[in-house]
Length: 444
Image (cartoon, rainbow, N blue to C red; front, side, top):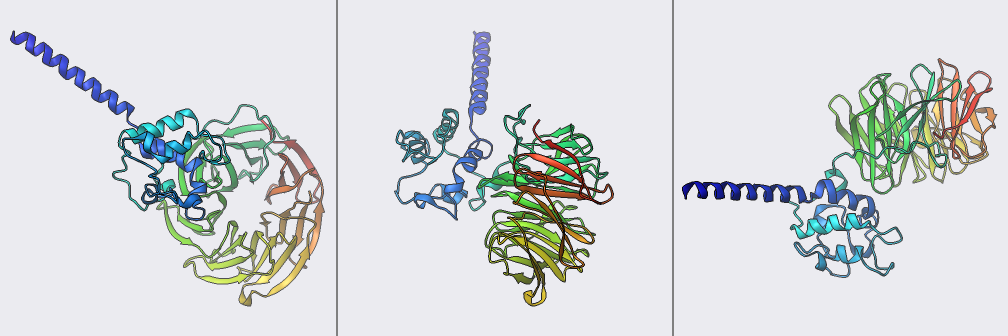
């Protein structure tokens, strides 16, 4: 009898253990499973900037508060009484959420429903933390083996030796032979859209910035040697539009579509400062040659210059009266070049924001690239321009693309220029005479 009791006790203990394990396996986590769905599909319309229906879910504190309709977004343990689920499954497209978008998948709705049924647990998550900040960095899906359509070239960079051109792809950086246009490398696990590729102090590593508009922005450090993402350096609530490495320092400045500039100490891997002097997207960043001043262009129709150490605003130039797309420094940051949606180049001084020169362009310019004597400008009129700083003259206006030129890179030592276009084409040119070396469509 005692032996039978022991056997039944063992069976009972094993059954209890199995049930606990099954429950643990079925438990839905908010950070890892629910929050990423909300961030991708819901936050853009329900955040501090745009609280549709008076409802926000961009922080833990906000997501449980009712909107204008007073219905409870989440009723712990009761999916059928939770406004989230009722709206996600609503038959009327004018009432279903997300609005004006594809409905959430049945799998996503069921996942959120299970989390609610299990008690909608949020313990241990700070109430005021932004939703994006609690989500672990994602492993992104692999890019398609072959692209159905060419992808706009929104970022370009040369390899350290000038033999390769890196371009933006879909969830990947693509590497091309600069001489013949052959695809020589694909580096995945990147954000959906890439807007910045920049060299680091290590020739085998690149900073890659981008994100998903209205959802997440990131800068990832790409290790070219082992084809992996070494770390995620910056994360934010909207896309990263540009990055700039400070001369003589282990600091990275990051331009974001949430109107801020983040200054990152790369040695400590931490944010040293946030600059919030712009009222709209920060489109490009540039340090002065000595690294003491940081310039920024913005969609808020201004270009600004700050002390790179303290973040103190030193000057603001409003002369474009239109969105400013690009900026570059010279004379150790005493003068600056900026371009904007007014289709003009402006040269100006920080002191008193005094305009020195104004040069017309044939279309909408994008981010600038500067060397010692010239500024290179990709343009919406299907040309790229070279401005000579010595005399404020357009020295080169080069055709050759069939669509807007959206990005440009130069490698002085290799004597090459690379340009990328909205139609996915890349061109490599000689720096000396602007002769075309190779043209191809960046479509794997």
